[in-house]
Image (tube, rainbow, N blue to C red; front, side, top):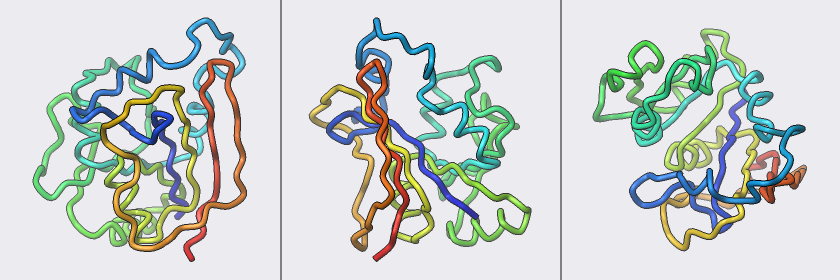
Length: 187
């Protein structure tokens, strides 16, 4: 199964403030830019390419706090699994949308492959780091917002080995966000 990361960070590599806030994403960049040709910076096409999503508990809790309406739900009908060793049920507003999983992520990937899932969207800093350390990520798309936070939750935690990124493509959007897509090669 192909596992892909699609995530935004500040220019200095943070995915959220220490309290999990991501409001800075909505105020970063040039608000007057004409984004008609790339209004979602490729997210819609990406989400159409995946058939399941694996996220961490903190990511799930952040989405729960957003209290999204059905019209705001960005994941369509994608099957979503949240990883947690402490929470067995999703928050009430995510019941029926998210399945909980506790255990080894390699076993989860094998289970999903056995159910004919082909492309997983991996989200959440700790989850991405765990998948990288298990050599399960195939490609990453990282969109850098033109803002420096100075501190917060970094995208990557401690990696157990060096990882080579290859076949890089960069896209600069009119709002000054820069997106880098690359494949992952485990040395």
